[in-house]
Image 1 (spheres, rainbow, N blue to C red):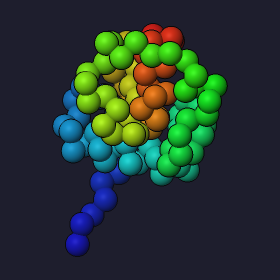
Image 2: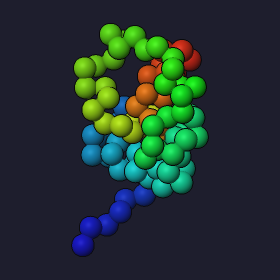
Image 3: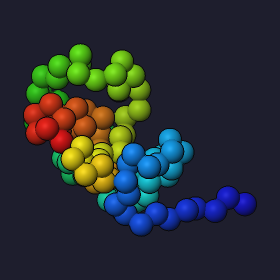
Image 4: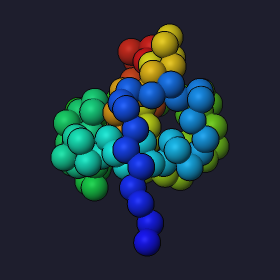
Length: 99
């Protein structure tokens, strides 16, 4: 029997293991009712065209950035988690909003 760990959100992203990041991401997905923190679109669908039409400088991101379609967004100033986002939304947030 596996037990589900519930984290007190937000969490310090830099203090989480990769397994804990996964668990926190899943907790945010549940909390957000399956919607992206950034665009509010369904996480099991592509982000809306208003997001995907923005060009991304992929050189800013690791090669495997799009390997996982849902990311755990965190504030780069405070390191605190903010929510689950589409990978593309994560790129837009970073490149265009410095988040």
